[in-house]
Image 1 (cartoon, one colour):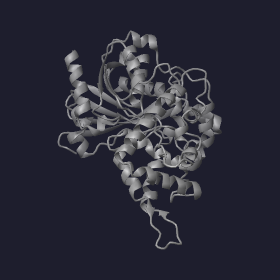
Image 2 (tube, one colour):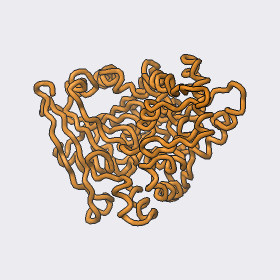
Image 3 (cartoon, one colour):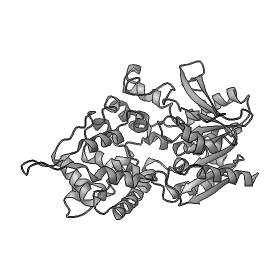
Length: 431
């Protein structure tokens, strides 16, 4: 590690339900990264849901966003409940808790509202009660807005990158806005790599005609292949997808044998599709949009039917139409094709049917907000709708927005120090 930077482990025992402090307890882990212990705290809320916090490498501490943060703060990288070194929620740990209903009841306490209460629990132990700053990326920004709604007294300032959620829209609204953005990303991808139109069609035709099981047991269906498009929302995602496709097939040595999908292609697809390291992302993704009495009921799958261009069966029946890749959507078939998710199929169904979700945001509190908030909104964001984000920015009093087309959704990490430096500059100018 660079000289002068210290990493310190913290492990906290917190209530599973913070309104029942005497009930079941779980552990939440956080890693402190410090260059100067006199500096104020900045807690980082990772995107997801279900991703652990970053594990900083020397390069991150020398030139990444953490290096910029350390000039002004001591940084706390929080493994949100259920992820990383916090008490895990996976196919290995959930089934012993009981049936699908019981597992779903447990997981209902793993949304943004509970993550915020964990953060407040930890803040009171680390800061002596003083408010701290929060940086939320993507889903971490959703958590930050929930934080502003429920515990603004714990916040000195808030920074959000690519993570202003719709405040009152439901999962259906999110996906009706998402599929047109996916179409736009596909158009850009195929414009940049027109040769991939035929390659993607050939792969989809092959998968339609041949059951393909990858080495780890993943069933590679046409829909699963389409879901590789989730990378198209990142800085170098189009190139990654292109390079993946370019040598997908091993040409048959004789005319009597058909081309096969290459081992390299299968191995990389296997890695890209597996939820083994982030099962909560799949199980809880639509629940991050749920507020009120209605079930999400597999919103991404229901809404997809309103956009027939994503139906590969119809597309392949046409002469030259491109197979469209999909983005950040979770479907029931994920729990059939992915071996890491198959044991969680019933609990995912129970989560999808759940009807008693509590509110995540308080529009009235946000309208009267007094905490300084600075947010970066990306104009071409695949994962978080720009119009929704700007509407939310208008609804939060005192929020200063930077709208940019210079970066994709991963701008915080892909830009080095640029995105965070500009947000911190906005905060300095406002003081």
